[in-house]
Image (cartoon, rainbow, N blue to C red):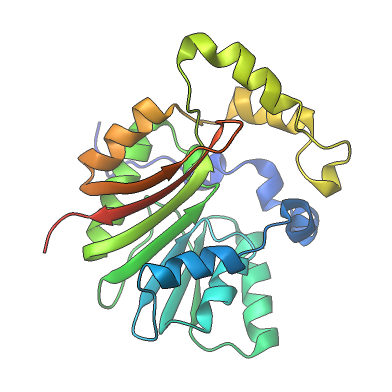
Length: 234
């Protein structure tokens, strides 16, 4: 198999993410305040000289929040509808340092100097584990030595024998209405059709790609991981 024959990432993104009507209500559904994420990036060194790549940028909320504190933000998403939503926000706000790119972890082609920061939330799980490992290696190549990767995603921090209990508790967190968050049915679809993996599989991939995991937080439910990683080297 040749790595020039990449999977079609847009086909792995989930059909809802390609639907303009779904994208229009995405910000309310996700309900994410990216201010804390920007604060964490600033604590790690994000400043007016930094370049930040946001993989799986969605509707651009993180990219726009970070634009005021760094030199260049590249918002990357495979969904044309998501990219269009980000571009609309950027234009409406008169932001000049956010670039919108339709691509994925495997297909993005970087121009310019290496980035100091990469951020990705709820996107890597769309790739099977083999391609996760390739994506992590590609992200490492895009960063300067000692560059920072913030990775937040559905990752299972328990042994396979404990899955039934932890997954049952997670499914109970589903919302009643889809527009208010992810329902139990949507969580079940994620579990069945997407590629979230265990921490004890993902973390060796992160390290093999050339990163040192500086921080890992799995939360109380232990189905969601928040990583701060540093690219090894000088």
